[in-house]
Image 1 (cartoon, rainbow, N blue to C red):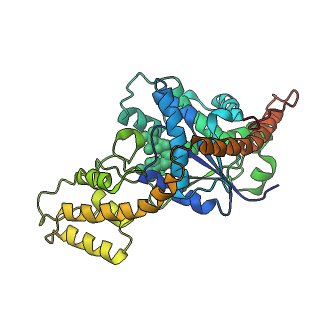
Image 2 (image 1 turned 30 degrees about the vertical axis):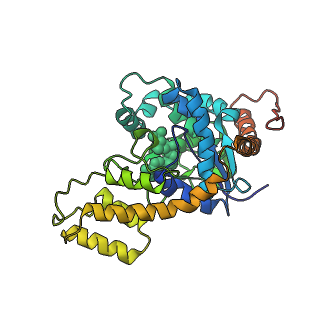
Image 3 (image 1 turned 180 degrees about the horizontal axis):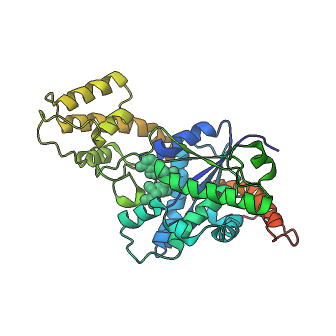
Amino acid sequence: MSTREVILTGDTPTGQLHLGHYFGSVRRRVELQETHDCYFLLANMHAYTTRSENPDEIHSDTLEIVRDYLAMGIDPAKAAILLQSETPAIAELTFLFSMLLPFNRVMRNPTLKEEIKVKGLGENYSFGFPLYAVGQTADILAFRAHSVPVGEDQVPHIELTREVARRFNKLYCGIDENIEDDDPIMLEKGLFPIPRADVGKVGKLIGTDGINKMSKSLNNAILITDNPKKVKKKLGQLYTGRQSVTDPGDPESSLMQYVDIFIADKDRAAELKDKYVRGDNIGDGHIKVEVAEAISELLAPMQERRAQYDGDDDTIIDIIRDGTARANIKTEETLAMAKEVSGLGYFSRAITFGDSK
Ligand code: ATP
Ligand code: MG
Protein backbone atom coordinates (compact mmCIF):
# COMPACT_ATOMS: atom_id res chain seq x y z
CA MET A 1 0.00 0.00 0.00
CA SER A 2 1.16 3.50 -0.82
CA THR A 3 2.29 5.60 2.11
CA ARG A 4 2.19 8.83 0.15
CA GLU A 5 -0.24 11.57 1.12
CA VAL A 6 -3.44 11.71 -0.88
CA ILE A 7 -4.50 14.78 -2.87
CA LEU A 8 -8.01 15.28 -4.18
CA THR A 9 -9.27 18.25 -6.12
CA GLY A 10 -11.34 18.89 -9.20
CA ASP A 11 -13.34 21.10 -11.49
CA THR A 12 -16.97 21.42 -12.45
CA PRO A 13 -17.68 21.21 -16.20
CA THR A 14 -19.54 24.51 -16.41
CA GLY A 15 -17.25 25.65 -19.25
CA GLN A 16 -13.60 25.41 -20.24
CA LEU A 17 -10.70 26.05 -17.90
CA HIS A 18 -9.10 29.46 -17.59
CA LEU A 19 -6.10 31.21 -16.10
CA GLY A 20 -7.80 31.33 -12.68
CA HIS A 21 -7.76 27.55 -12.60
CA TYR A 22 -4.14 27.40 -13.67
CA PHE A 23 -2.85 29.79 -11.02
CA GLY A 24 -5.40 28.87 -8.33
CA SER A 25 -5.02 25.11 -8.46
CA VAL A 26 -3.71 23.31 -11.55
CA ARG A 27 -0.14 24.64 -11.41
CA ARG A 28 0.14 23.20 -7.90
CA ARG A 29 -1.35 19.89 -9.03
CA VAL A 30 1.34 19.54 -11.68
CA GLU A 31 3.98 19.72 -8.91
CA LEU A 32 2.10 17.44 -6.52
CA GLN A 33 1.57 14.64 -9.05
CA GLU A 34 5.30 13.88 -8.77
CA THR A 35 5.25 13.17 -5.05
CA HIS A 36 1.66 12.42 -3.96
CA ASP A 37 -1.20 10.05 -4.79
CA CYS A 38 -3.27 12.49 -6.84
CA TYR A 39 -6.91 12.24 -7.87
CA PHE A 40 -8.41 14.94 -10.07
CA LEU A 41 -12.16 14.80 -10.23
CA LEU A 42 -14.46 15.89 -13.05
CA ALA A 43 -17.47 17.09 -11.05
CA ASN A 44 -19.96 16.46 -13.81
CA MET A 45 -22.87 15.73 -11.44
CA HIS A 46 -22.31 19.11 -9.82
CA ALA A 47 -22.63 20.81 -13.20
CA TYR A 48 -26.29 19.70 -13.20
CA THR A 49 -26.95 21.98 -10.21
CA THR A 50 -27.04 24.98 -12.54
CA ARG A 51 -27.14 23.49 -16.06
CA SER A 52 -29.44 20.47 -15.97
CA GLU A 53 -31.15 21.66 -19.16
CA ASN A 54 -27.85 21.46 -21.07
CA PRO A 55 -26.67 17.84 -20.72
CA ASP A 56 -24.83 17.87 -24.07
CA GLU A 57 -22.79 20.89 -23.04
CA ILE A 58 -21.90 19.27 -19.71
CA HIS A 59 -20.80 16.17 -21.60
CA SER A 60 -18.58 18.04 -24.04
CA ASP A 61 -17.19 20.44 -21.40
CA THR A 62 -16.17 17.40 -19.34
CA LEU A 63 -14.01 16.16 -22.21
CA GLU A 64 -12.67 19.65 -22.92
CA ILE A 65 -11.55 20.01 -19.30
CA VAL A 66 -9.49 16.84 -19.66
CA ARG A 67 -7.84 18.38 -22.74
CA ASP A 68 -7.13 21.50 -20.67
CA TYR A 69 -5.59 19.34 -17.92
CA LEU A 70 -3.29 17.67 -20.43
CA ALA A 71 -2.43 21.06 -21.93
CA MET A 72 -1.43 22.42 -18.51
CA GLY A 73 0.81 19.45 -17.74
CA ILE A 74 -1.30 16.97 -15.78
CA ASP A 75 -0.02 13.48 -16.58
CA PRO A 76 -2.68 10.73 -16.46
CA ALA A 77 0.02 8.14 -15.84
CA LYS A 78 0.83 9.86 -12.56
CA ALA A 79 -2.54 11.27 -11.49
CA ALA A 80 -5.95 9.62 -11.82
CA ILE A 81 -8.46 11.77 -13.73
CA LEU A 82 -11.88 10.49 -12.73
CA LEU A 83 -15.52 10.97 -13.51
CA GLN A 84 -17.67 11.77 -10.49
CA SER A 85 -20.81 10.18 -11.98
CA GLU A 86 -19.05 6.79 -12.35
CA THR A 87 -17.64 6.79 -8.83
CA PRO A 88 -20.78 5.68 -6.97
CA ALA A 89 -19.26 5.63 -3.49
CA ILE A 90 -19.25 9.44 -3.66
CA ALA A 91 -23.04 9.57 -4.10
CA GLU A 92 -23.56 7.06 -1.31
CA LEU A 93 -21.35 8.98 1.09
CA THR A 94 -23.10 12.23 0.17
CA PHE A 95 -26.36 10.77 1.46
CA LEU A 96 -24.77 9.59 4.68
CA PHE A 97 -22.85 12.84 5.28
CA SER A 98 -25.95 14.97 4.65
CA MET A 99 -27.23 13.47 7.91
CA LEU A 100 -24.18 14.71 9.81
CA LEU A 101 -24.62 18.40 8.99
CA PRO A 102 -27.39 20.67 10.22
CA PHE A 103 -29.33 22.09 7.26
CA ASN A 104 -28.75 25.68 8.40
CA ARG A 105 -25.03 25.07 8.68
CA VAL A 106 -24.88 24.17 4.98
CA MET A 107 -26.96 27.19 4.00
CA ARG A 108 -24.66 29.53 5.94
CA ASN A 109 -21.73 28.58 3.70
CA PRO A 110 -20.51 31.95 2.31
CA THR A 111 -19.36 30.47 -1.02
CA LEU A 112 -22.86 29.09 -1.67
CA LYS A 113 -24.38 32.47 -0.79
CA GLU A 114 -21.95 34.27 -3.09
CA GLU A 115 -22.67 31.87 -5.96
CA ILE A 116 -26.41 32.34 -5.53
CA LYS A 117 -25.84 36.08 -5.79
CA VAL A 118 -23.36 36.36 -8.67
CA LYS A 119 -25.00 33.64 -10.76
CA GLY A 120 -28.39 35.31 -10.25
CA LEU A 121 -30.01 32.11 -8.94
CA GLY A 122 -32.44 34.05 -6.72
CA GLU A 123 -34.90 31.82 -4.87
CA ASN A 124 -35.21 29.34 -7.69
CA TYR A 125 -32.17 27.16 -7.29
CA SER A 126 -32.70 23.44 -7.14
CA PHE A 127 -32.55 21.37 -3.95
CA GLY A 128 -29.39 19.86 -5.44
CA PHE A 129 -27.64 23.23 -5.55
CA PRO A 130 -26.86 23.51 -1.82
CA LEU A 131 -26.51 19.73 -1.70
CA TYR A 132 -23.43 20.04 -3.90
CA ALA A 133 -21.57 21.50 -0.90
CA VAL A 134 -22.27 18.28 1.00
CA GLY A 135 -21.36 16.32 -2.13
CA GLN A 136 -18.02 18.04 -2.18
CA THR A 137 -17.28 16.81 1.34
CA ALA A 138 -17.90 13.30 0.00
CA ASP A 139 -15.67 13.93 -3.06
CA ILE A 140 -12.79 14.66 -0.72
CA LEU A 141 -13.45 12.17 2.08
CA ALA A 142 -14.15 9.26 -0.30
CA PHE A 143 -10.42 9.41 -1.07
CA ARG A 144 -9.44 10.03 2.57
CA ALA A 145 -7.50 12.99 1.18
CA HIS A 146 -4.96 14.82 3.32
CA SER A 147 -4.82 17.99 1.26
CA VAL A 148 -6.92 19.80 -1.34
CA PRO A 149 -5.22 22.32 -3.67
CA VAL A 150 -7.85 25.00 -4.37
CA GLY A 151 -8.51 28.69 -4.89
CA GLU A 152 -9.58 30.71 -1.85
CA ASP A 153 -13.30 30.57 -2.72
CA GLN A 154 -13.19 26.87 -1.83
CA VAL A 155 -11.95 27.32 1.74
CA PRO A 156 -15.50 27.33 3.25
CA HIS A 157 -16.18 24.02 1.48
CA ILE A 158 -13.03 22.51 2.92
CA GLU A 159 -14.04 23.78 6.37
CA LEU A 160 -17.38 21.99 5.96
CA THR A 161 -15.46 18.86 4.96
CA ARG A 162 -13.30 19.09 8.07
CA GLU A 163 -16.44 19.29 10.18
CA VAL A 164 -17.91 16.19 8.56
CA ALA A 165 -14.66 14.27 9.05
CA ARG A 166 -14.44 15.24 12.73
CA ARG A 167 -18.09 14.43 13.33
CA PHE A 168 -17.85 11.05 11.61
CA ASN A 169 -14.67 10.14 13.48
CA LYS A 170 -16.32 11.11 16.74
CA LEU A 171 -19.66 9.40 16.16
CA TYR A 172 -18.47 6.19 14.59
CA CYS A 173 -14.78 5.77 15.43
CA GLY A 174 -14.84 6.75 19.09
CA ILE A 175 -12.54 9.76 18.74
CA ASP A 176 -12.88 12.13 21.65
CA GLU A 177 -14.19 15.61 20.84
CA ASN A 178 -11.12 17.31 22.28
CA ILE A 179 -8.57 15.44 20.20
CA GLU A 180 -6.57 17.81 17.96
CA ASP A 181 -6.90 17.40 14.19
CA ASP A 182 -3.25 16.44 13.77
CA ASP A 183 -3.03 14.18 16.84
CA PRO A 184 -1.69 10.77 15.68
CA ILE A 185 -4.73 9.11 17.29
CA MET A 186 -6.94 10.87 14.74
CA LEU A 187 -5.14 9.00 11.95
CA GLU A 188 -4.85 5.74 13.87
CA LYS A 189 -8.42 5.41 15.07
CA GLY A 190 -10.34 7.82 12.86
CA LEU A 191 -11.40 6.77 9.39
CA PHE A 192 -10.90 10.21 7.90
CA PRO A 193 -7.81 12.43 8.07
CA ILE A 194 -8.92 16.06 8.61
CA PRO A 195 -8.06 17.52 5.18
CA ARG A 196 -6.17 20.79 4.68
CA ALA A 197 -6.98 23.47 2.08
CA ASP A 198 -3.81 24.13 0.10
CA VAL A 199 -4.42 27.62 -1.31
CA GLY A 200 -1.87 28.61 -3.95
CA LYS A 201 0.00 31.91 -4.19
CA VAL A 202 -2.78 33.29 -6.39
CA GLY A 203 -5.86 32.43 -4.35
CA LYS A 204 -8.15 34.62 -6.37
CA LEU A 205 -7.41 35.79 -9.89
CA ILE A 206 -9.74 38.65 -10.85
CA GLY A 207 -11.63 38.34 -14.13
CA THR A 208 -11.50 40.67 -17.12
CA ASP A 209 -14.52 42.54 -15.74
CA GLY A 210 -12.03 43.89 -13.19
CA ILE A 211 -14.44 43.05 -10.34
CA ASN A 212 -15.35 39.40 -9.81
CA LYS A 213 -13.24 36.30 -9.47
CA MET A 214 -12.36 34.97 -12.92
CA SER A 215 -15.01 32.32 -13.41
CA LYS A 216 -16.22 29.94 -16.10
CA SER A 217 -19.82 30.95 -15.70
CA LEU A 218 -19.35 34.73 -15.50
CA ASN A 219 -18.00 35.40 -18.98
CA ASN A 220 -14.94 37.19 -17.60
CA ALA A 221 -12.34 34.50 -18.18
CA ILE A 222 -9.24 34.14 -20.35
CA LEU A 223 -9.42 30.54 -21.48
CA ILE A 224 -6.46 28.20 -21.92
CA THR A 225 -7.55 27.96 -25.58
CA ASP A 226 -7.76 31.72 -26.28
CA ASN A 227 -5.52 32.81 -29.18
CA PRO A 228 -3.39 35.98 -28.94
CA LYS A 229 -6.04 38.09 -30.68
CA LYS A 230 -8.71 37.04 -28.19
CA VAL A 231 -6.42 37.57 -25.22
CA LYS A 232 -5.65 41.10 -26.44
CA LYS A 233 -9.34 41.85 -26.95
CA LYS A 234 -10.37 40.56 -23.53
CA LEU A 235 -7.64 42.54 -21.82
CA GLY A 236 -8.68 45.63 -23.75
CA GLN A 237 -12.07 45.35 -22.03
CA LEU A 238 -10.58 45.31 -18.54
CA TYR A 239 -12.05 48.31 -16.76
CA THR A 240 -9.67 50.28 -14.55
CA GLY A 241 -11.58 53.54 -14.06
CA ARG A 242 -8.43 55.56 -14.86
CA GLN A 243 -9.00 58.65 -17.06
CA SER A 244 -5.56 59.80 -18.18
CA VAL A 245 -1.94 58.67 -18.46
CA THR A 246 -0.99 61.02 -15.63
CA ASP A 247 -3.63 59.76 -13.17
CA PRO A 248 -1.99 57.94 -10.25
CA GLY A 249 -3.09 54.29 -10.64
CA ASP A 250 -4.31 51.98 -7.89
CA PRO A 251 -1.57 49.47 -6.94
CA GLU A 252 -4.30 47.01 -5.88
CA SER A 253 -6.17 47.18 -9.22
CA SER A 254 -6.80 44.07 -11.27
CA LEU A 255 -4.45 45.38 -13.97
CA MET A 256 -1.64 45.48 -11.41
CA GLN A 257 -2.54 41.96 -10.24
CA TYR A 258 -2.08 40.88 -13.85
CA VAL A 259 1.30 42.65 -14.07
CA ASP A 260 2.47 40.88 -10.91
CA ILE A 261 1.34 37.49 -12.07
CA PHE A 262 2.02 37.46 -15.78
CA ILE A 263 5.07 39.63 -16.42
CA ALA A 264 7.79 37.07 -15.80
CA ASP A 265 10.64 39.65 -15.79
CA LYS A 266 10.28 40.95 -12.23
CA ASP A 267 12.33 44.13 -12.85
CA ARG A 268 10.07 45.03 -15.75
CA ALA A 269 6.96 44.33 -13.63
CA ALA A 270 8.28 46.60 -10.86
CA GLU A 271 9.06 49.36 -13.37
CA LEU A 272 5.57 49.18 -14.91
CA LYS A 273 3.95 49.22 -11.51
CA ASP A 274 6.02 52.16 -10.31
CA LYS A 275 5.16 54.26 -13.35
CA TYR A 276 1.50 53.34 -13.15
CA VAL A 277 1.15 54.16 -9.48
CA ARG A 278 2.87 57.53 -9.95
CA GLY A 279 0.90 58.35 -13.11
CA ASP A 280 4.17 58.81 -14.95
CA ASN A 281 2.86 59.14 -18.47
CA ILE A 282 1.90 55.50 -18.90
CA GLY A 283 -1.42 54.47 -20.43
CA ASP A 284 -3.53 51.47 -19.42
CA GLY A 285 -3.53 50.42 -23.08
CA HIS A 286 0.25 50.13 -23.14
CA ILE A 287 0.34 47.94 -20.03
CA LYS A 288 -2.52 45.79 -21.29
CA VAL A 289 -0.65 45.04 -24.53
CA GLU A 290 2.44 43.96 -22.59
CA VAL A 291 0.37 41.77 -20.26
CA ALA A 292 -1.51 40.25 -23.21
CA GLU A 293 1.77 39.29 -24.88
CA ALA A 294 3.03 37.69 -21.67
CA ILE A 295 -0.18 35.69 -21.30
CA SER A 296 -0.02 34.45 -24.87
CA GLU A 297 3.57 33.40 -24.37
CA LEU A 298 2.49 31.34 -21.34
CA LEU A 299 -0.41 29.79 -23.23
CA ALA A 300 1.45 28.94 -26.48
CA PRO A 301 3.11 25.68 -25.30
CA MET A 302 -0.12 24.63 -23.56
CA GLN A 303 -2.08 25.13 -26.75
CA GLU A 304 0.51 23.16 -28.68
CA ARG A 305 0.15 20.20 -26.30
CA ARG A 306 -3.63 20.48 -26.39
CA ALA A 307 -3.70 20.35 -30.19
CA GLN A 308 -2.48 16.73 -30.07
CA TYR A 309 -5.87 15.70 -28.67
CA ASP A 310 -8.07 17.77 -31.00
CA GLY A 311 -11.01 15.71 -32.20
CA ASP A 312 -9.70 12.56 -30.51
CA ASP A 313 -12.44 11.76 -27.99
CA ASP A 314 -11.44 8.08 -27.79
CA THR A 315 -8.10 8.86 -26.16
CA ILE A 316 -9.77 11.22 -23.71
CA ILE A 317 -12.41 8.61 -22.79
CA ASP A 318 -9.67 6.01 -22.27
CA ILE A 319 -7.90 8.38 -19.87
CA ILE A 320 -11.09 8.93 -17.86
CA ARG A 321 -11.99 5.24 -17.82
CA ASP A 322 -8.58 4.29 -16.51
CA GLY A 323 -8.54 7.07 -13.87
CA THR A 324 -12.07 6.23 -12.73
CA ALA A 325 -11.18 2.56 -12.32
CA ARG A 326 -8.22 3.53 -10.10
CA ALA A 327 -10.42 5.94 -8.16
CA ASN A 328 -13.08 3.30 -7.53
CA ILE A 329 -10.58 0.97 -5.89
CA LYS A 330 -9.85 3.69 -3.34
CA THR A 331 -13.42 4.95 -2.85
CA GLU A 332 -15.02 1.49 -2.56
CA GLU A 333 -12.49 0.70 0.15
CA THR A 334 -13.42 3.89 2.02
CA LEU A 335 -17.13 3.23 1.61
CA ALA A 336 -16.83 -0.32 2.93
CA MET A 337 -14.95 0.94 6.00
CA ALA A 338 -17.45 3.77 6.54
CA LYS A 339 -20.36 1.32 6.34
CA GLU A 340 -18.70 -1.11 8.69
CA VAL A 341 -18.36 1.44 11.48
CA SER A 342 -21.68 3.24 10.94
CA GLY A 343 -24.02 0.26 11.21
CA LEU A 344 -24.41 -0.27 7.45
CA GLY A 345 -22.03 -3.21 7.14
CA TYR A 346 -24.28 -6.23 6.57
CA PHE A 347 -22.26 -8.03 3.90
CA SER A 348 -19.52 -7.05 1.50
CA ARG A 349 -20.21 -6.26 -2.10
CA ALA A 350 -17.92 -6.05 -5.08
CA ILE A 351 -18.47 -3.75 -8.02
CA THR A 352 -16.35 -4.09 -11.11
CA PHE A 353 -15.42 -0.92 -12.91
CA GLY A 354 -13.85 0.24 -16.09
CA ASP A 355 -12.98 -3.04 -17.78
CA SER A 356 -15.66 -3.08 -20.48
CA LYS A 357 -15.18 -0.94 -23.56
P1 ATP B 1 -18.02 28.22 -11.83
O1 ATP B 1 -18.20 29.59 -12.40
O2 ATP B 1 -18.86 27.20 -12.50
O3 ATP B 1 -18.11 28.20 -10.32
P2 ATP B 1 -15.19 28.37 -11.61
O4 ATP B 1 -14.54 29.09 -12.74
O5 ATP B 1 -15.41 29.09 -10.32
O6 ATP B 1 -16.54 27.81 -12.19
P3 ATP B 1 -14.66 25.89 -10.29
O7 ATP B 1 -14.90 24.63 -11.03
O8 ATP B 1 -15.71 26.36 -9.31
O9 ATP B 1 -14.40 27.05 -11.35
O10 ATP B 1 -13.25 25.86 -9.55
C1 ATP B 1 -12.26 24.87 -9.76
C2 ATP B 1 -11.02 25.21 -8.98
O11 ATP B 1 -10.37 26.36 -9.53
C3 ATP B 1 -11.29 25.58 -7.52
O12 ATP B 1 -10.21 25.11 -6.75
C4 ATP B 1 -11.30 27.08 -7.52
O13 ATP B 1 -10.97 27.63 -6.26
C5 ATP B 1 -10.22 27.37 -8.55
N1 ATP B 1 -10.48 28.66 -9.18
C6 ATP B 1 -11.49 28.94 -10.03
N2 ATP B 1 -11.46 30.22 -10.39
C7 ATP B 1 -10.38 30.77 -9.76
C8 ATP B 1 -9.80 32.08 -9.74
N3 ATP B 1 -10.32 33.07 -10.45
N4 ATP B 1 -8.70 32.29 -8.99
C9 ATP B 1 -8.15 31.28 -8.26
N5 ATP B 1 -8.64 30.02 -8.25
C10 ATP B 1 -9.75 29.77 -8.98
MG1 MG C 1 -16.73 28.07 -8.74
